[in-house]
Image (cartoon, rainbow, N blue to C red; front, side, top):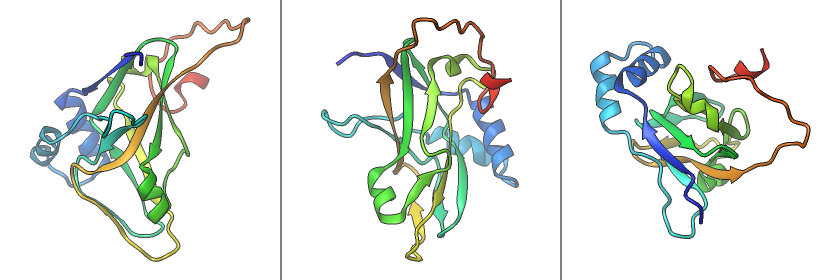
Length: 170
């Protein structure tokens, strides 16, 4: 196994700004309390490919509802690697929990963005059975898998990223 990445928390300042912007009406003190409880992603077993992402606060989603979750996490990784994010398998199976962008792609250079590479995960309970999904603070709700990738022989990309969604196609 190659060791190619390291998870870190974003700064408290970054997290509080993103949390209070995402959830209107939440105080700075409440956001700081959530920040203090953030757990870094980890594998559950030696044979696990996925690193579990833990809910920073309680999440309740009724069928058809969507939530954007600031995770408080960033990932440094070696060049040539990408972090692919998915819902936890059991939640997808039981509730049809889905990432709104199907698969989250975290590029290695996202770590250096102005937002500190803060990862957000947006999920929807797409269940048809009428079941609400409740994930307690600290429970796993998503998973990330590091994957090595290649580039074409004639690749000439030389731009520098500074941002998240849509920043590389401007």
